[in-house]
Image (cartoon, rainbow, N blue to C red; front, side, top):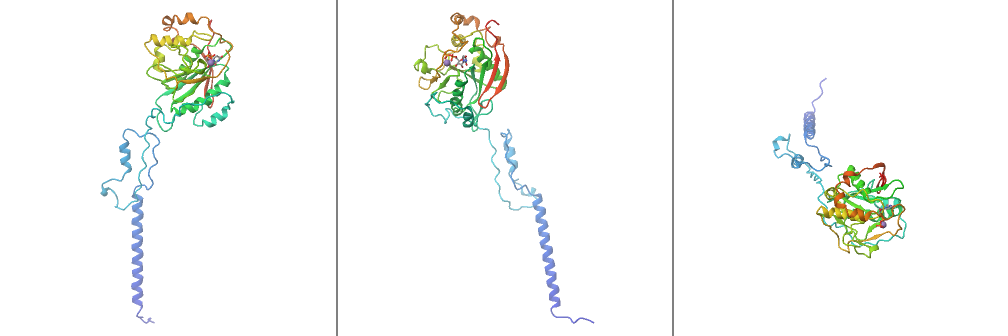
Length: 363
Ligand code: UDP
Ligand code: MN
């Protein structure tokens, strides 16, 4: 039996057709959209480069910006503009003088020092007593060399006071304590030669500061770095009434560049016991045509921790005779005749300790 043709039937059919057409259109649009986003550029920017940009950094940069020719894109489509992060540039040179300096400092030795606390306060100092400023490139790479035997208490004060100062001076530095092994007569200058040699095996230092363990600067403007002439830093010591004991005095703390140090064949190896080696060094510098650079008497103020004469560091009776012959001896006594044995190297949080066998006056 034939159904009676209702008047709404054709209308229903037309509606179904319309719905089907709409669905088709929608899915086509969706397909097209999905295909488009698969071909498009990544939405998230590339991670920033960690290394300083190479010479062709501009090419790298331009690669991150969209191409100008729209025809190269599958379909022009408005994109959310994600600005490419700027490439980190290598830090520029540290300003001079360092803006972190504070000037005169209060220095005293009444409170005992806890090294663990000193290490905590100086958390930026790396193992072995190494530091470099993060935000700028240090002007110099400085190895600080300390001649040492049995002065643990003094070393604690030195580390407590010097690490914050050296960081404020924005130096790329390392601290090397050269520890004389055994009971032989002490030999300060030979230990300093060893410090120079050993530090250079570790890093490309360009400046060497030689410091007694018991001397603390009283002003952080007295920068522990090198100058065009060899530098004497401890010019105004409390034990000498804040004056130079004599004009040629070069003891305590001094700074020589690698070139200045090698030019004089380093320091003498033959001064056993106390005294004379600093005057020999002064002679060497003068004989090689160099002069002494110094801070003024205010900036150059420093304190020495009071102490009595150490065992096996009695005044050397040969010193007067030796300093009278520097000119003849300096060519054959120094870096070119240095012999020693490293017994052990200890990396502590605030310094590197190198224990050495340096022989004896007879050997
Ligand atoms: N020194 C040391 N142990 C010694 C003798 C000397 O560590 O037994 C080191 C230490 O760094 C000291 C430096 O050599 O500061 C110079 O010796 P001293 O302090 O006796 O000389 P002075 O006080 O007369 O300048
Ligand atoms: Mn001393």
